[in-house]
Image 1 (cartoon, rainbow, N blue to C red):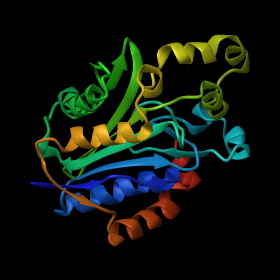
Image 2 (image 1 turned 30 degrees about the horizontal axis):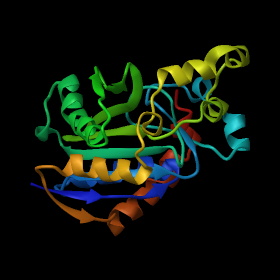
Image 3 (image 1 turned 90 degrees about the horizontal axis):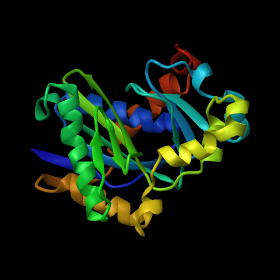
Image 4 (image 1 turned 45 degrees about the vertical axis):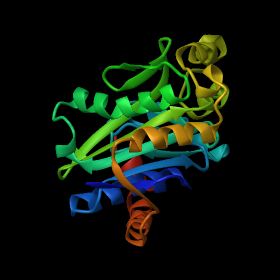
Length: 247
């Protein structure tokens, strides 16, 4: 099996989620599996499939600050995506390549993430069911869905974090925010820049090496059919209130 490696890209929130779906659909039709690395522009909040947008996101603040918001097809909680502070990966492959058990499949993919951090000298640990931690602090969050025989797992790789900016986008009680929420976020979250001297490019290179180690792969780009399908999905699904306000 030969993997396609898409090494970079920076898209708005709806386009990022639409590309994941467009590629997953193509893999379901028999196309090669894909590993892709990407970033977000502008900043965004993604919420889990089962969450309420109104409960999790300060919509007015996001619109004022030009921060996107989008519902993922994967579960989990609300995540703030910074254009310069986060690298995101997606693995999209037939389910048969991974364990049927959810936690085991998370662990299998997250072992690649751990390998990437190890290449940077960062001794991180898998924290079931789907997190990666450094010294008890979250360094990477991961989420998964399986559709039509194809597994999609994507995850955050935190390079830097501005808690004040994050809480601008999330729906947080002002009294709690004024109290200790920002400091608590700093204590709960680790970033690559805070625990190593690695640059964002170092992080990307290390993760590419880790995800491709021992695999047949070719460096590729997004296909025209994927981009066309993603554009349609972004407009007709991921930018709509019908999708984002569904809960």
